[in-house]
Length: 407
Image 1 (cartoon, rainbow, N blue to C red):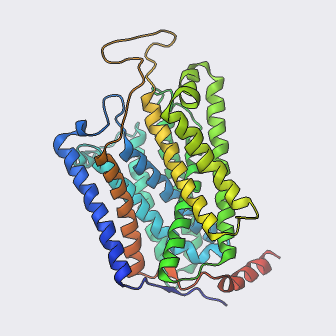
Image 2: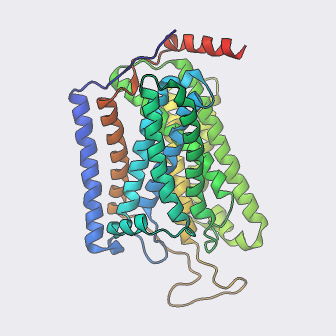
Image 3: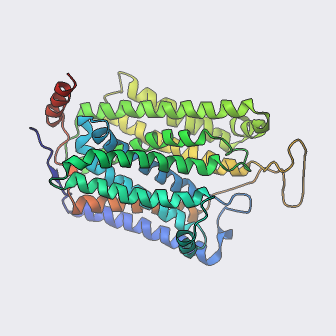
């Protein structure tokens, strides 16, 4: 039987330079957090109307992507797709790294990070935020156990049961994250049950795009082969997930348009929102959905490594645009305090809120991304996560065994 050989990343000048670059980005993010801690959020673009700014966009993207990245491991152990088995370890490592980076940004953006102790010791189970603390910490523990049974000898029989647990838990995690917005009935742009399945679809798309980018760049830097057939499998799967995001997005807005109470916010997002409308149609729909699907399915580009890489980049950028529209756009639209009536006051009631991200917010968000990459890179240096080869020749015996098992 063909066995997958895993090795650590080799140290060298490139490895040290990458760690130095990531360390500088993390230091800049910590400096930005300390700057906001000292002077308050007045130094950011956030205000009384928009309390969740650009750092939350990065945090939610990383958390959602963490769940989706683990889908590669789920395909191997839960759905028994042998072609993805060599990537299962790397999938678990990257899932933990992305979640850690997202939570770091979330905590440092609170304004009072020390208040996290209160959130971890006093629970209000009527709040979806309290539920998510258990979902996030549970995800970390379960994925760590998932990696343990995958990498330990004699534990093979536990891989599938633990894989099922991780699969169900990550669905619950993404559902909980989407429910944060779906259950906020006071915001016209959030109040929708479709947010939960939409976030599940977003996690699959964003997570796979991040995984493709990470594994392609890592294999190229480490001199590891990555087979064209495996790349095509991942690319076509990415196209399916990108299409699923577009489908749930269409259902979200069509459902909202059917209800008169959401007519104003829908017109704001789809037609009159300025930047938010541009990000929705240009960033989310075209760059993040239609164009990547065309790149991975057209015969001329479907097997091109550069095209698949570019499609993954577009999905990531489109994902950031989508989360920006959901989080920032949903807050920018004024609260409907008295339905059917117009109101105005010195507190800008009924006025679209303005928001311009500041440099500290951007640095904090990028610092979280750098932290996630640092955890992943150090993990690959210390433990054997990366296969020695992912070439098509190495994958052939696995495909033959899968075909014989299916027959």
